[in-house]
Image (cartoon, rainbow, N blue to C red; front, top):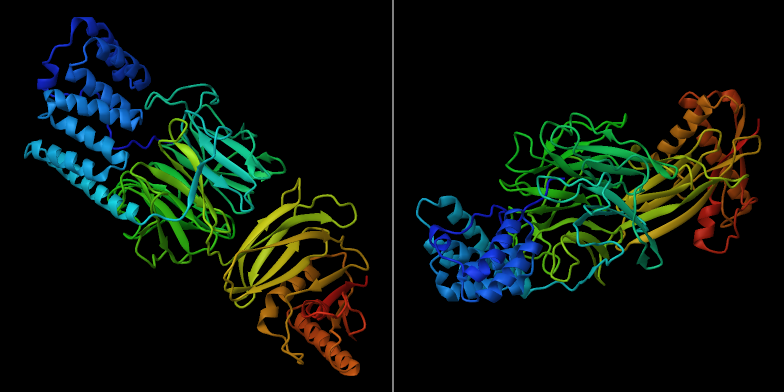
Length: 640
């Protein structure tokens, strides 16, 4: 990906004619010239070393302190940068505008906002009237400082931790993405082990590669490069991960100015990435992206023509064929004339996080959130700065929450870091996450081998399919995220197997929950039984409720398409409440209602029969409301 530059320009001819006119002590000249050579090459580590030697030989030369201070600033050694720039100022460089600008930047990044404002104001007064762009820039920096003062006065109660040497190096690490169960972390790094070992001449860093780490208990394992044919000699960055961990969004710089691709986890290996197509990728720069929890909505960034300016955030809906549709530009509550990057749509399906230079930030990129209508893309709230100490005066980007909203991962440059950008984790004690994570594995009931199955999620109220997932072919593992507010019908389907049905009804939910189901699929043979958990009746009635229709339609489709199934019996079952004779009659009437509906939508009457069993065949003891609910069921038994 293109490197996001801070306000500090890497152009090195910074000094005015008055500074350049000053002479350096002959004894210091050799070290100074070597320092300037490294400075011009953006090698600030070596530049600092030579400027320090020059300083020892000529401690009263303001030019040496100035360039050493700027080098320290660009190396993010802020206290030392402030010290050197203050020395340059005390040695009669106070009338040089750039000195006050860089001193203001050093104070700003060090969160000394009042001192930064003073330096910026001095810089502003020394600028010429024609330097309108510089004046506009410094006004914005002063506004950043004023925002920083307010945010630091009301800090968030969170703990922020550098993920440490197993993850971070002295090189840039960023773009953290995590699986919904928070066991796998993928990220992007520009370390020396980069595939091909090449350096990007544009910014002097190694090309990007994707790395992975797995959580063992509470610790992240040592990283390794992602497998498969993902990493190339060009830029390859992991920019998004589906909630089930089976699809990865990848940035690659090979085509156009950089495009977004997708790869699928096939067993233990990632497939060759394929382009997201012309509705997403253009001749512009498409650089970061995020998939909604149901895999149906994509948010991505682009600097294509027609936006608000810089990089903007767009939305695209996925068709049933799996293709992404026309890009929708999000509104001004998100996009500004400045850059917006790193969108992340939370698992709740309504909160969008992104980084922006254009809204009220402390400086550089800050992280913001808005509420969004996932269907239309309408922004329902004003952007909110998520606060200090998550946001700082430097760039804070690529922010992703864990599903339970208690931890977040993001990229930042901080004093306690290991070098350049590092990956950090924040934790908080109070979290609001009204959703359920349904996870587990799918195995063959006979062989216990993993089964690659389709998981279909339906809104029972509307009958609309709202998500389709695939379990991993190697492990059988699956993860599905279900935001509160719906009655969900869940079906697991695989060729040659009786489908598995489950109902999760969460109209109201205030806390995060996890449900683990180890699903054993039975081969579709004589004697197979399918329990229809999404067939509903009102209390003591046999009329089908509309929430039953999606499940029965799916059953009808299976009966029409599965040629080896010749005859099935529809069985009605009740719990033990009430009179046994009444329960037997009620169960028969309910089975008949299912029978009649299946015939009405085209299932061959000759392959159907029905029977009521009342309370005679409980699955579990009728000793609790939960168990009684399990015993109230409709079953399909394969007779032939």
